[in-house]
Structure formats: C-alpha cells, structure tokens
Length: 210
Image 1 (cartoon, rainbow, N blue to C red):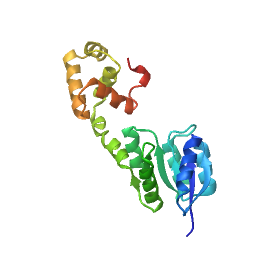
Image 2 (spheres, helix red, strand yellow):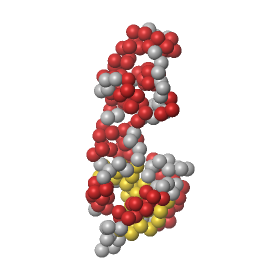
Image 3 (cartoon, one colour):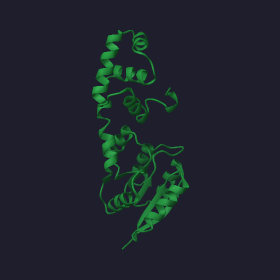
Image 4 (cartoon, one colour):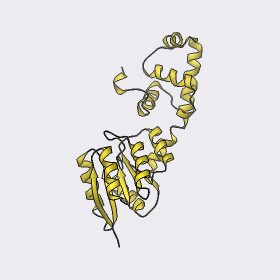
C-alpha cells in the first residue's frame, strides 16, 4: 500500500512532535514536511503536493483561512484537516463552511484524536463533536442585531444601563430590553455567562474584565 504523504503545520515544535509520534502508529502515513508558520506551510504544500495538510490555523505570518485558500489554489488535490486550540464557535462555523476535510480540537483525548485522524486518512470528512457544538452555539450570536451587538459589548465591558443609554442616545428602558433580548437569543442567564460568550467569540479581550 502506498503511504499517504502528510505535511504538519503548527508553530509549536512539541505539538508537531506529538502529532508525528501519533501518526507513526499508522503504517500508511509518511510525514514529508513540517512547517512552523503560515508561509512555510504554503511553501511546503506547493513543493510536496501532499495528500493531507494537518494545519493549526493560529500561526504567525498567514492566517489559517488564508492558508486554506492558498492550498486550494496551489495543490487542489491536497485535503486539509485543521487541528486547533481555538474554541471560538464563529471560527468553527467558518471552517466548517469552508469545506475543510477534518476539524480536530487540541482538547481531544488521545484515543479520540487518533480515531478522528484515522477516519480522515480513510477519506472521510470528520468534524469532532465538540467543534460542531461550538459552531451550533453561535447561532444566537448570528441572530443579534447590530445595536444588540453594540449593547452587548458595552455590557460585558462593565458599562451601566444609564451609561449605555447616554452613549447611544436611547432610553435606559430600551437598553434593558436589548439586554433581555440578547440573553434570550444567546441562552445565557447571567452577566458571567454573557462575558464568557464575548470572550470566546473575541468580542472582549481578557484584559478588559474588571
């Protein structure tokens, strides 16, 4: 059986080493290159034309979605599986919509990661259940109006209803109505839950929390 040729792209050497060790258990896999940033990943795929690129999307120089687009251009036969520590539901939804061949989270147990890689190597499109759950959880965020997003950002940054009302020239009652609508759409029931959603989706930097 001819070995499948893989490129591993991750900016952490320990992660690349761990993946190489895990993949060594598969007799039909040959790692032909490793890359530590986005430009190297694109160059390696252009040169090697591998069967599969195992890609961390949060790498220096070039972002993951841009890398995926470049791979489709330079090596259209190369399948792409994303292996990421990101837990943004919005990013998960983007990746799934982009048509990646696999989506694996770094939080997966080793046995589940091995099983997922095996299914991807066997030609399946495999999205881990946790990534699907994160993507599904963003539906409420998608439904927010632009004003509700603005109010949400102010709320999680610590602004009071009166401060938000003055900022947007609306009444405090209208702000309260927006807060109620936001929490209903996102299915959260406390300010803490709202902050967690905002952090996860990049609407609030961790340093902004009081």
